[in-house]
Every structure is written in C-alpha cells, then in structure tokens.
Length: 95
Image 1 (cartoon, rainbow, N blue to C red):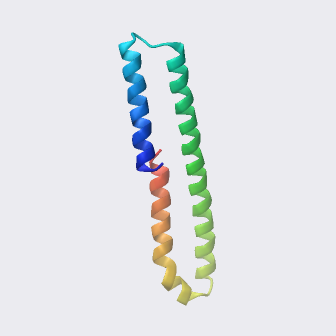
Image 2: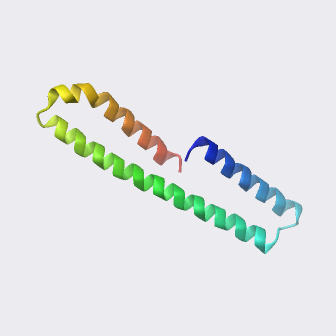
Image 3: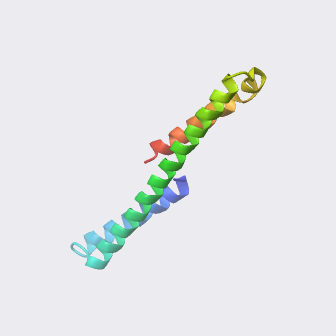
C-alpha cells in the first residue's frame, strides 16, 4: 500500500473512531461503513501480497535461468533482481 493510501486509511479510521466516541458508541451505519472500508482495504492488502508472491516466483525463475549459463547477463542484472526482491519484501511487510 502506498504511503498516501495508508495515510488516507489512517485518517478515515481516526475520523470514524472520533465519530464513534463522540456519539457514545456510534450508529450501526457508521460501524457498518467502517467495517466495509476495513474489508476493502484488507482485500487490497491480500492482493498486494499475492502479487508480491507471484513477482518473487518469477524473479526466482529468472535468476535460475541466468545462473544456468548466462554469466554476463547475471552480472549485469543481479543487483536489479536483489533490489526487486527487497521492494517486494517491503510490500509484504506493510501488512
């Protein structure tokens, strides 16, 4: 999740929490809206995690092909592969 999206989600959750506290527990509509937003964002997180796992698998396949005889290519893009793996791992860690 992008930092801007995360910040927006936090603001939405804080606003909803403030509404609940000021209304003495809140209404069903507010609770339902909050639960719906959380569910949508959990789905987005799961999709990002799934995409990250798929990308890691493809990167591993690419790395295997490179290691099987194309040393000159491997030397050129090995750093990029590592950087991509770090990026994907950080995406997965954001959940």
